[in-house]
Every structure is written in structure tokens, then in C-alpha cells.
Image (cartoon, rainbow, N blue to C red; front, side, top):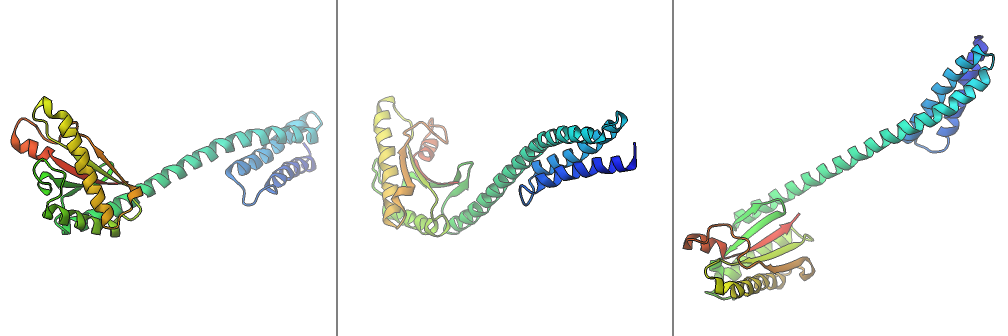
Length: 236
């Protein structure tokens, strides 16, 4: 093959790559791969074409094939890049959630408020003692506890969704309906108290679960006492 023919083949491939490059600035991964494919295909096609006396035709065919192959490879690479970017974004979001939850937990604990981190977010526990016996009315101590919680959440969790969930202990089968209603009323009482302290009602949801979600055994009074509770969950 003559040197001039090889140069023309390379020039043709470079021309295809430059035409493609001119379509977008900066180049995407797909466009880069397509341009490289066109250049390499044209050069290879020119060399092969020269053996049969048609280097220009070989370069054109090789460039076109290289362009298509390069674009397919570029699609795959670009898809991988997008997945990596999405995974990194999720990791960044999780890191931010961990940091803001840690700050929230630290302030709650400084106020001697029982709280823990869960998969859902930060869960604040309000034990049965903050209510009157068999009642949804907050005791004076319970009302102060809710005010303290609202004070922290207004500063550290503004704009986050809040789930207020009431729970009861399981004692007798004929009390299930009563316990369900009591858990609903207690959850709503805490939600109303939070709203009274300046929290957004649109961000607060109150739900009663009755005896369906115990955290201790109902066989002994100690376990039943733990199960009678309201949880305020600051959602991730």
C-alpha cells in the first residue's frame, strides 16, 4: 500500500470523527467512542481496501462500520457511567441522612429524651407514663416532654415528615378493640401537641397500631409496660 493512500484513509477516518465531534460540545462518552471507532475503522478499512486497489472505498466502509460499533460500545460505557453516578448520588444522600440523624440524636439525648436510629429514621419513644391511666390525656410531665421534642425537631428536623404511632399492650382478647382505639387517640394527642408547638400538620401523620407491634413480651407486666407507648418517628 502506498503511503499517500494510507494517509488518505486516516484523513477520512479523522474527518468522520471530527464531523461527529462537531455535533456536541463537550463530547459524551457515546460520541467519543463513536469517533474513535470511526477513525480506527476507516484506517483499517483503508489498509484492507488498498490490497484490492480501493483504499478510499475501504476507508469509507471501515469508517461507517467503526462508527456504528463505537457508538454501541459508547452506549454501554455511558450506561455504566450513569449507574455509577446514580449509586454515588445514593451514597451521598445516605451520608447526609446519617449526619443529620446523628446531630438530631445528640440534641435529643442532651434533653434526656429517649431516642434511637432505625432504618426509617430517628425514633423518639414516649412511654406510657406520659398519659393518664387508660387515657389519651397527656400528664403535665408528658406535655413538657412533647414540648421538648417539638423544640428540638423545629430546629433540627424542619421540613421532614413525622410519623406518630401509638401502641398498646395485649392483656385480654376482649380488650383488643379498646386498645386499638386507645392507641389511635394517644397518637393523635401527641400529634396535636406537636402542631400546637409550631410543627406543620401537613408533615405529621398519626396512626394507632393497637397491640400489633410489641417490643417486649406481654406475658409479664414489665413487658406490657414497655409496649404501652407512642413513638415519634422522624422519617429519612
